Length: 243
Image (cartoon, rainbow, N blue to C red; front, side):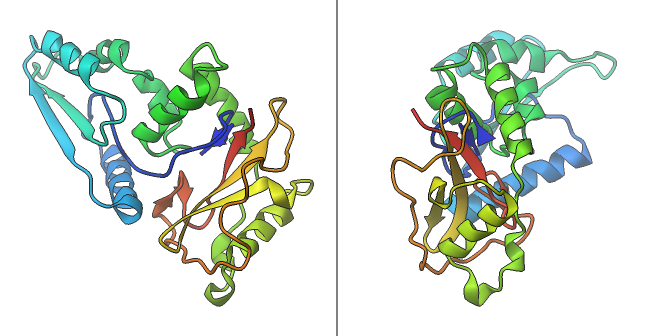
């Protein structure tokens, strides 16, 4: 499963890509969006955020746009619809009919996977082969994510921060987790994520495709609050199931 802990197998990196839905102007939502954009830029570089404006009669055009936009576009879309101030919008519910993952499902699991494009990747690459719906897939992912103890990697002195030290931290926080079941993914010397490998019956197992970075590889850690691989740089982990 992929966890970044979803019952997936291998997860993608933390790029904040294609986000389809409506935006509400709240301070919390704005902060989350800004944090996601900055995290994506830190790991992958800048990506475009596209604003789509429409009147109350623009639903048909929005539907056509979403149905023809590939999930892997690498762009984020913010839909702003012109409506009367006393009209309760249901645009998000309507648009959800034409997105790969229901908007509410993406919102519910955003803290676990703070990238709409990553959520779409996980569902398309791993969820569709074994689950009946995105909701079932991400609920299973959340159960695995919540059962995993995420170590505080910032407690590791910078001069000792290696892929091996990160593996040791995960093993210490999760007794019974095999050390050869932790894949360390990096980008240009930066720690991106730890992938924990599980069997199809959700048992921790040896990663079948190698371990990524070698134990002795020196790494840099993104500051706390900058997302790398699905969670903050100080506690990045994700599960993946084999098969």
